Length: 275
Image (tube, rainbow, N blue to C red; front, side, top):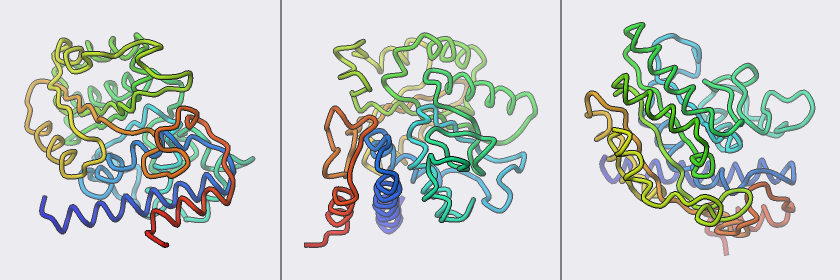
């Protein structure tokens, strides 16, 4: 990926970060921390990697994305609106009565959402099913999944990991948002994920680890994963929860955070580089 493409994607990620802060700020409460930590990977997937069509979101042969950490839905919604899957004014109905954009992703309500998620620990299993179904139906597509580190403590993920390896699902590429925080504290204190790379390697996944806010590094990892045959891939993203949001970055209480319009406006001003 050349420097112009990297800059284009980084600028788009900045725009999506600003829009996400604004949209959640309009509501006054939301999962700002976990949204901010996955902006780069979601931007890369939707603006470069994935084969999708906003004009035909349900076409059969297309790449699919399972955002297992469904509470990061607002970040994905901002991308989908920007790409034209639905009108941008929907964003300001986030999580209010009758919305098409609930707090957690819902495939029956939102165009462009491939799997309903939010019951943490289940998304990877759904992604394995989609990848296996694609294999059975000879569909030329990849399935991507983004899981959280907190939900990685749940046993269902490891059943899914074993199944994906057993069926040699090389059309499945997953990411762990390794921001090292969860709703109740630091992951190391609640249930340590130390040696996370060796865990995935031990389940016979092709395993990579990169800076989750480095667009070029994530892209390189995805391209390397695509070249792997006979095994699923896990890309561990070292991220910062709340990244780029002045009042939330690295703050343990940022999982589902109340914040004011003034805080949102200040964070946006800083991201825009305004004095």
